Image 1 (cartoon, rainbow, N blue to C red):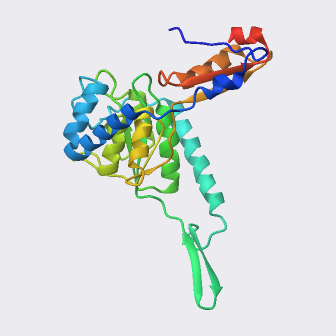
Image 2 (cartoon, helix red, strand yellow):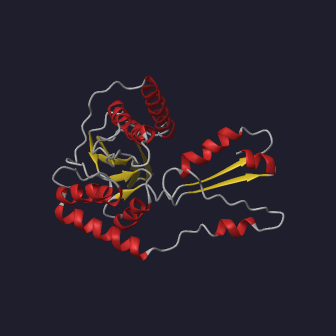
Image 3 (tube, rainbow, N blue to C red):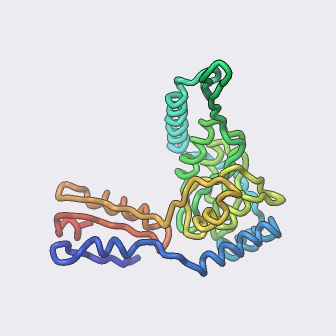
Length: 281
């Protein structure tokens, strides 16, 4: 696959001008398309999810619910999850170390007749989103479910688009099993956000949705913020890699590709003071 690469020589051309051209611009067609998907899912539930999934993800999609075939999980997945979970558990312990009672709150007798305080409680349910289509991301499942489980969230559900065969990647399902998700659903983009925001016959409504995605997912988060909690608008993906003569060109190329592989509108920037190293990468 060839990539559209452009070299900007800052000795004779402004690099800032090239960077400024990447600023996101309003897309009225995108906004209308996402609004229509949201309304369709809100009105028709599972029926709409299935039709949208067949149109955008896989013609062979026959069920919204994803099943785990129980295939063996790579030991590295289990090791990664344990490390992620332990890290966030320690993070929680440090952040709440000075709090009274159960470690999740504090109280202060501000005056003889005024008691104030704060309680930190985990959400009851969270929907995590793992992108699919061009690639599969078991790591995303681990990095989203790990913090939720460490925080004590009661139910963690996974949404991910179906592969061309109508199923979910085995690695993703294995990661979901290791992370003990409460349920997994084959749905992507704006439809997944809408399903988690309103609930359908099969998909439960959740308190918050987290995870990266394409511009359709981000636009759905933007439109549904307030109906459902969102973590942020992540994407299109962008990455900037800085190299010099001592850098490993293969590592630098991999760092670029792991981001810009997500979608055609992703951007990668490579900065180098060495023309030869730039060309090597």
